[in-house]
Length: 280
Image (cartoon, rainbow, N blue to C red; front, top):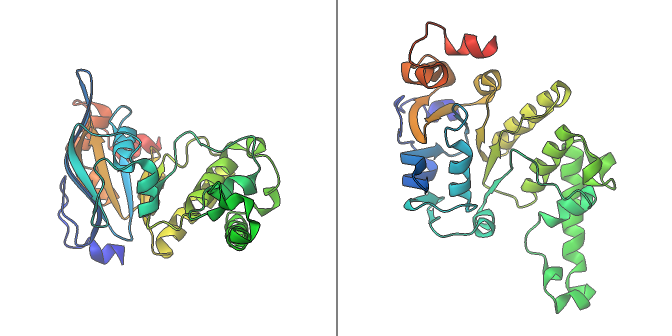
């Protein structure tokens, strides 16, 4: 499906997509005299897996923050699923259907795995101060949330850890927990910031399978990753950032051989294929 969607999309920076779920125009974020992000135009195709890559300091995580309401741009705006994102808080962005994970996991270490999962759900009447004293008003919803959490923990092979403190999990298990918790909101789009960072090889395959399953379930995935092998393996489309700008787009094989991309990663003077260099 995604391959067909990208068939007529030009392999160039800012390329328009046939059914874009996320669009950003003229987004600029400065920190003093430093321009961290300056994106003229950016689109993400619905129900696809898009990789956002680039050298360290390219502005990828900052751009993620701007799109998801964890930071705000001085110029430009984004639109998600037809809804303007300008000025929208991260909580409202999540309620609109776009959720994210972080490069450094945000699990609440002194709470159990199942408690972390329950926190991710929306529409919890028990969070209202007055209703909290009337259990019949929230017990049914709590049971629904718990059942949903158990199903996701089974899916991510964390069910046996449900009563363990999140702080006792390994780095890879915390990544799985964060992804599972994000799905408690039943999102339309999932944004993953370096999902493979710090994950041992035994869990890497599991994480990759889960990312592909998100697309199979009808969701859209945008992820930041430095491992070019992983990018090449699961992405439908690749967007490359350098010095805060988008410099190239296209299938993995196309962008890896792009001269501007090779210059960004390896410097202007080189004679080595980017993909071969990263693999080495």
